[in-house]
Length: 215
Image 1 (cartoon, rainbow, N blue to C red):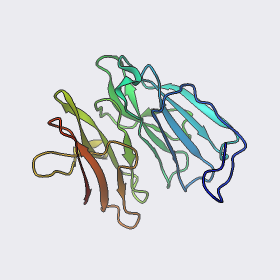
Image 2: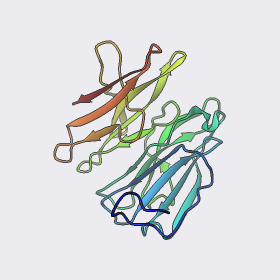
Image 3: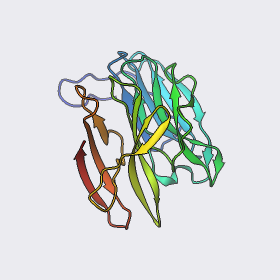
Image 4: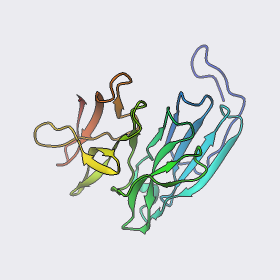
């Protein structure tokens, strides 16, 4: 791979994913040096998890996480990813559950860097949550965005989960709610877990609108 920008390192190795899809989310965290993970939305709707523990020299892969959705990758969503800073090896991703046209999205958790996965909670959502965030100083709080039914359009909302209980906390312009549509659309302050910045979108009525809120 070539160097990105002046003064950056050039990597001497390459890694090939199973699919050529661009529907991927990559994240690393300061808690473990050299740990990078990438969730890939497959053609059949399942999710692959690829990770490295040494900066990219050796990669591992966990295939076919979650269920298969009949819509496949054509829905255009990217799996959300969050790597915990305070607990080495703990990762959250979004994946499908079940199969067929009634398949929903679900948050999945791993405590071994992604070698094995289980359900994070009992909640489901429409398609994939494209953004997941937890304050590094309080792992009991989880924020995630995701699409909801908006008639013939796709609208987005922001949710917070505490102890398995999910609450819609979407910011509003007075008439419609907003939610993040991509990774890093919601972020809490490192010094104050209750200060949350959201870059969101709305499409309840077909007109796309954007906004940024600070709670």
